[in-house]
Picture 1 (cartoon, rainbow, N blue to C red):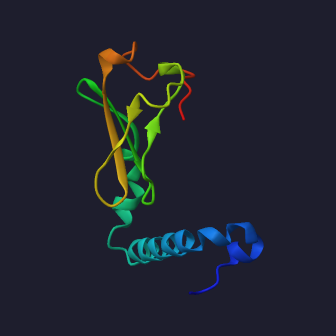
Picture 2: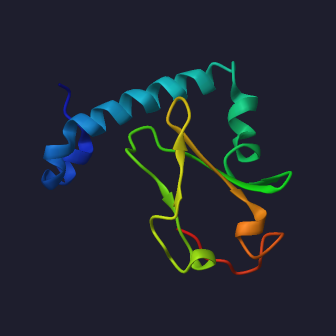
Length: 116
């Protein structure tokens, strides 16, 4: 396996070397795809798909986390309950949750809401 600079800079990361090598391969593949021009528009418009969005009567949140085993959305809107809103895996490391608006006690993005 190739040595990574991050491992040289922080030897405590050595047990996670396989993870970093995998992530580096994903990064290089995506970078090559973007720089080839084939999907630069798709990449630039990612904000239209990822993050928070309203669709009909749902608040939808999407995140790209290719090595995650599970993702939960929490915040002051649910009293920081870390198990209530679990994202579901889609494809290619994309995770999503659709929350019915009536569960949230608000209809539009409230100012100052805190999420994690």
